Image (cartoon, rainbow, N blue to C red):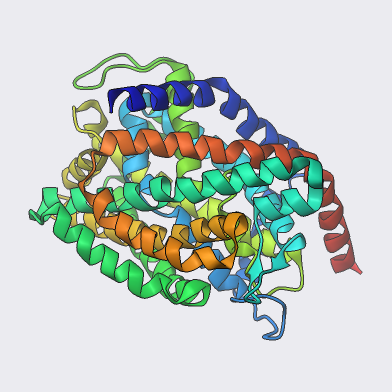
Length: 447
């Protein structure tokens, strides 16, 4: 087991040392500039499209709204609570600033991924709309790059068991064990039964559940965190200043905090930011490819809202609360840090906010990623693999509940990076397609 951990650690050091940091930021900046900052300028337009009705006879399997909610179900998970806490505990408050920067350029990345996913999508043998990086690599770049589409699908099918399954259920089981004393195996079995009941219905049932649960859980968590922050609003300016200053200067060791360099803050902010909003990973466009829509660009404006809501709203709430509490200098890590921070700001009730938010967030992420992994496996082996993948997915849930968290997080980081590489390269090659479709769409709107 030790040699496996050593390999994972080495791969992570290679991937996240500079390669992915440069690619994620570089591709995001390239897309943002090439799009003339439309992902930022058109955020209000995206929110208007979110609640606008759609023709029921448009091509696709689920509504644009449910496509976004399915995408959000896959991104709003433990990364918003455990991931943010881990980033600050290791990289200091400055890690939150770099999460914000990753999210800003990620708006353009997520927008472009969805545009390409809808534009190059296909129908499978069951008549379902399928799309995502493996399809826009195959249909957009041609036969010479089929190895990249295969690599993405392979890493995506495997990554789901890390980022979207075991990491999520492990956090649920750990949180319920710490707070309520519920055995991990019991939690794993219950979650597996609930997941199985949903995913056996395919994308339509996943989209329906996500469309009901995700909006409620987002508003509830943001509202509760907002109340906690407002109760301590006098300290907020000082906290925001500390976050910005820590992003550009080393943080000295204090209390249980070991200290952090600027590079550590950047690395933790970017890696945990990507883990949270998945911009650049190529997962979210798999859901958006199923949307009933006549326009790839319109769906792209919805897709970019996912990054805004996930990181710039939800992660910010968690991160600001942790820094505001001062508990980031303690020896607490991950879930314990989030709980201690909330309990410090709101005694006796903070624990409920963290645990309830984490359980619902993680559960919906398991649902969203079940669909992502299934689509990747289908690309590799055809529709016959779907039922076997769903069974294996459900069986992995109780196993994940019993595993050690540290190794799971390391594996998730590695698989994230391996997924992102072919997707980011494809986005660079296909950015002229995104620019052309975008210019035409918004020019037609002005007519």
